[in-house]
Amino acid sequence: MAVADKLDAREFFFGHKACAGCGGSLAVRIALKVLGERAVATLPAGCMSAVGFNFPQLAFTNNAFISPFAATASVMTGLEAGLRRRGETDYHIVGFAGDGGTADIGLQALSGAIDRNDNIIYICYDNEAYMNTGIQKSGLTPLGARTTTTPGGSRSRKKDMSAIIDAHGIPYAATASVGYIDDYIRKVEKAASIKGTKYIHVLAPCPTGWGIATDETVEIAREAVDVGVWELKEYENGIWTTNIEPKNPDRVEEYYARQGRFRNTGRKTQNG
Amino acid sequence: MQSERLYPNPAEIPNSTAFKAGYLVTKNAGWRSVRPVIDAGKCVKCQQCYLYCPDGTISPEIAVDYDFCKGCGICAKACRLGAITMIPERGDADA
Ligand SMILES: Cc1ncc(C[n+]2csc(CCOP(=O)(O)OP(=O)(O)O)c2C)c(N)n1
Ligand code: SF4
Ligand code: SF4
Ligand code: SF4
Ligand SMILES: [Mg+2]
Image (cartoon, rainbow over all chains, first blue to last red; front, top):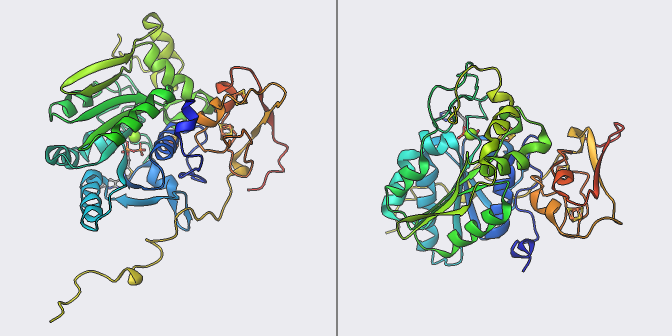
């Protein structure tokens, strides 16, 4: 079966106001086309809620909620309990939180949900900074990247969210990239088939914050995997499996060189 | 005895925070400086452009919705057959 045939032909995130070429909007769009109209989405403060809910322009055609910034997973927990209490069965509770909303401010709520093993699909779209408020450094900004709060390049390494998540003993976790859409689709499908808490962390480049052209988003997301800066892997039964091996680890310098955020900072990246 | 309602009646929630899903009042065409044009003669309907478009403005049948396409150019790069060309807008797109 062709990959596209696995998707609902309808669009559930359409007419949104994301910048042209936004990787986060591609991640949200595709996940909803896998999960279908019975997906109930939760979006904390961040670009995807800002571009999706501009009253009265409402870009989600499924049920979708804005949560407080720190409360994505708690709101998902409540929605899931409410639907279960009403006797509903065929639904997916999905969350789309940014890197700041996940690795920093929403971490406690997410940790609690995994601890209770709530039946939710939490998707972190990682654009590696607080983009919606003007490109501030988050815990997932990589070493050396320029943001408005790290004008000389970030001095800290990207937090290892995979390690934080697997330390909880979650039923399913995966990393993904909008540059490998088939792999991402398969992972969202798989998450939808598993009961308990599922966590998918998808690299979603942001042309505005990364200093790349609008047509480079998918290429860069693919290159991050190919040079080994972003590993595609999944976690099941307590072990991580690598899905796609880096093809061009020797070309890592090119990955950094083509992004404005790494240029002329004089700061080291995680690859030296 | 009926207990007092402790939560708002859904009908009383202001429309500005709870509203119809998928309600679109503006288009995105005016954001575009270039537009994708598909050469039907070269297209093999592999759907790569449909899959990778962040805005969902290419249908599964490979027709572009020019009301909402933002002209990012991702589809043109996704097409391995070079069937999509980005051409300059002449400034006549609807906002
Ligand atoms: C409690 C709280 N603190 C701060 C903010 C301001 N705020 C809104 S969006 C945002 C950035 C979100 O960054 P991220 O989660 O990475 O998502 P992105 O915007 O990058 O998609 C911030 C700081 C807020 N809305 N609520
Ligand atoms: S700033 Fe970046 S993440 Fe936010 S809408 Fe624009 S491209 Fe997307
Ligand atoms: S990617 Fe190119 S060949 Fe494939 S469907 Fe789109 S236009 Fe046609
Ligand atoms: S130019 Fe961008 S928004 Fe327009 S159809 Fe192509 S991928 Fe979609
Ligand atoms: Mg972010």
